[in-house]
Length: 392
Image (cartoon, rainbow, N blue to C red):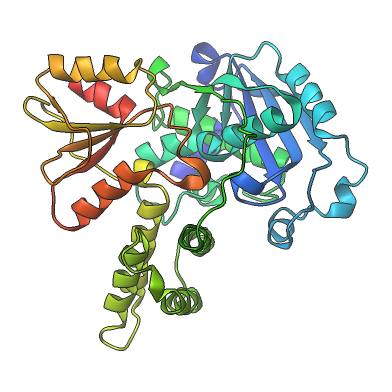
């Protein structure tokens, strides 16, 4: 019954034609999977009008670096294929001409990958920054669609009886995302209202003096990339667990550093009985995902009141300056803590992030909040938009 409904939805007139008559779907393919080191190799986009594909755009892009072997295995794009492709300035100009006049962009994990990476590239190489309104279908799916084993685009598409064939090609991913988005709207799992439209305002690429990291910082960054590789497919295999255990044993000098202690403790706990169970690997995977993305992966109890609640602020806020946010909290009876401590109730994360959160490092306040939380303290990490919505 559901499959037939979805099939009819994606082949008939969309209900979004009234609420979002025109929008753009974007997807990028890159040389790597890390924002800090990736270059764009393919841009795909769709112009949607009245719930139907009106125009398509796709171009390869000649990157400034080589395509990694790992990325090429996923997107099937080789260095030879992009050798004669237009450079970023030409490709970006063509894309922006295609996108001209479209106010809202959509995509899958736009906020977490495509928009910051695109802004990073055009800022670094072209001296431009990106400002756009968007709807992240991935974020909406995670919020509203329950019961999936993971939230990969292909997994969500399959649950809606939508073909995921040709995934990891920029244009094909746009088409799959478009069908998924329209299906979720028609099934009322996504409600088109102004609150789901976010604002991305890119910051200039920082090209100042390069700071040399300490050995421990480099090792922690290596651990972060290893964990990212392990959790990418939504599960931890026995082989991946063995690799993680070997890494942990090799770097025991990192004891006392977050998040080494967290991962070390979890691995040792799994090994206590001498065998590794699938349930244990699932719990490990969930813990690792929270560590990689503590802001979006962490959950919190709905705020009833902030009267007498201790609140720490971190990052830059869409609401206004840090002083504006502090004044609002105090006006509503809250208490401002300068640093995270055991008595802190909320670690409030600004919607504009922070320049200090480079390379996925979310800063000492969020790290400390996670540490205290795992020790039993009732500290919750909460995003700015959730905070103000619930307090109001």
